[in-house]
Image (cartoon, rainbow, N blue to C red):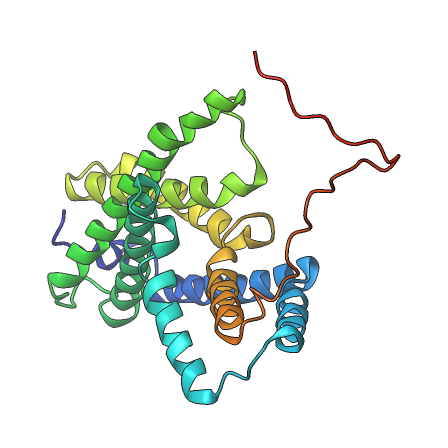
Length: 264
């Protein structure tokens, strides 16, 4: 199972061209959904206007070389390492899901486009990365959902209440879970169950990539921009360019002096 390319075995019943066309469709859904999300929510306009306001408030100009350094630091610390989450369980779950998803998508594209038929000798590394990526997503997703998300019960909310924001996590975990089950039953020769879970895998993946306007999928594109804008504001001084806090008045508005608090 772990060393076999599930897509090459699928090519017996589904043309590699159909699988490749679906990958292009998923890409178009991601691009189109993200553009729609940006326009609908006004995210790009917000970041542009906020950067312009920060530039006007800034005490100094950040030059090109420093901007490049800030961009590199943003990518390495805020995006690749999610340092803003600290050394928390949430950060570990996030990293498992993020890097697992990257491995899963890259290995899927490689196997479908480079080794689409059973006659192609797929290097072992690609199915291994595909299964590893799916397992990482499942580990991070289920950990978040069943261990960390139940903490909302302490705030009086039900951990089983679903919202639009949950669409991304649920569809992502469902996609990788059904992919693993499809691969397993395909490997053991249970063709009926393999077809069943493959259909669920395709449905979940379609919801994942087609539901971008209603999920947090586009968040992965907004997050680097927001982190970069924040670091740039810190560098030019606009973030700290706020008026000092007002001192507490000695008297109330009616001219009555405030009495010291009594302690019992």
